[in-house]
Amino acid sequence: MIDQTQATPCVCVVSSGRQRKLPKGTEVEVRAVKDGNYGLYALAFVEGQDRPVFLGLQHLDFVSDVSAERKAEIDAEKAAWLAERDAPVVIGRGERHPGGKAIVVGLLVDLEATDQGAIRHAFFPLSQVTETDGIYSAPPWLARIKAQDAAYYWLSHGGRKGIDHLGGAGIAAHYQDGPTYPISVGDLREAAARR
Image 1 (cartoon, rainbow, N blue to C red):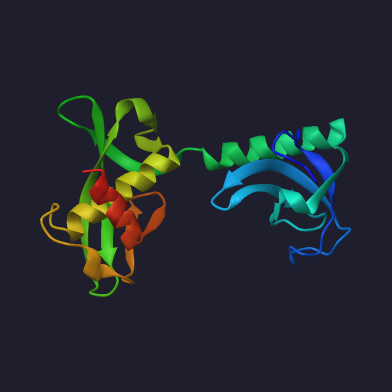
Image 2 (image 1 turned 30 degrees about the horizontal axis):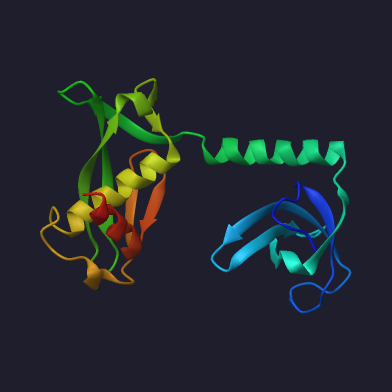
């Protein structure tokens, strides 16, 4: 059995068949030991599979540390994934807000159920955007939040009406030259909480 102090990444073997996810004796590569809703678990990968397997620590026995070459590969994969995840997304053409501290970008919010849509404005701080030939880019997390906020303000009439009746409605926010974000009722509730 391994515990939360186990250095990762490491190679372990499944010691028990009680967990029903992998047969006993399967060798796995444990990338991290984390604390979840149901206690400690290991984020494990089986050779040949891309998706992780989440195993309780009591079902794993330590075999060895990973080789230095394998550790370098894992670190390179992680760095590439983080770079891709955090790469700025194009939000389109914008204009400087009269206050001088923000860029105003238009986005289309549409509701599939009623075939209605509206152009809304999203305000991005100058410190968060980059500009190339008049086209602005922003971090993906901020672009998503601004899309959720724009959808919330349109659908709730500026926060004056409820949004709970929109369950299952096809809501989307489209940046001019950039990504499209599907908006769920949970996203609208998060936007309401940010008010």
